[in-house]
Image (tube, rainbow, N blue to C red; front, top):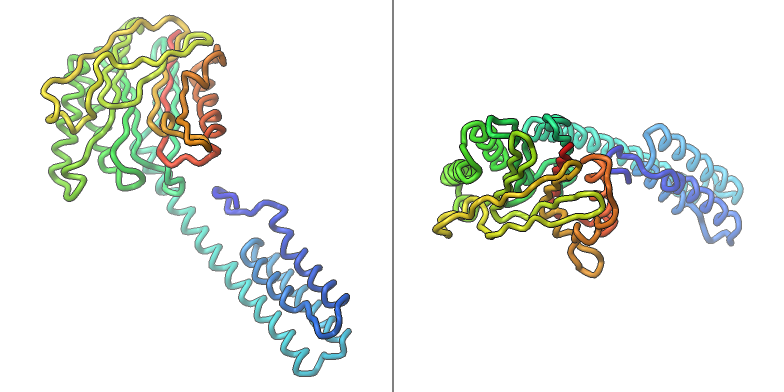
Length: 358
């Protein structure tokens, strides 16, 4: 079933009609003690689950007419046995119509929920501009709870007096339960990115906001809340890139057909766990060549597994596949490859942010 449109594939929608034909043939070609009525009844109920209301009504009417014709053929029309068979098909038709209405009502409710969730996602995670100075920008987001359309991954891009600053992170938890922490983190980043003199100060402000929010919560959200985050800052001329990693998967640098993981020189703990580490790591500095693409991902990419349980490695899988024509092409290639690697069995939120310097 198409989870977006609510419609079954065409071959599935022909199943009830095929069952009706099989039932009629079975009734005509077998001894009189064997009846095709149960198959006709099954077809009516199946039609309610797979077809439109009008199609269900037409198929149920056809099945009922076929059952009446069969009782006439066997000479049981007007007798108790024939009446029972006709009544069974008629009742199955009513059940099929009822099932169809229930599914339609559920589909309308689900569509409403999806609309609200998509509006919430656009409000919380707006799509950044496609271009900021010499930087081309593209993003994509896939929630683990596909019906919710929103989850615990977060990204943001801000043009600040200190250069273009980026955030990608992963809030503990999934689905709607993580939305509160996501909104706090994004609000703090958008405000602090304008005023924090450097990335360590920016990370400190984000951690303070998350800690303050955690105090207001209860249970595990108060004692075990944390967020992995990666902060990036492009200098005014965009030639210098500074990265500050707080327990997040490493970003990648793509230049031509090569890809390099930009691992932190000094690994550090996620935001919200600073009290466990007396000193925090300093930013790493890199040179970004013209045409280079910075690729930031969440663990929905790096923890995707194939059938053998092997984790996805962008360095191995994307090596030699460039050069790509901009950040959108990089993201499209990555997402398609992750889905092929995992067979569509992703169980975590996935956010990808790519920036190409021209």
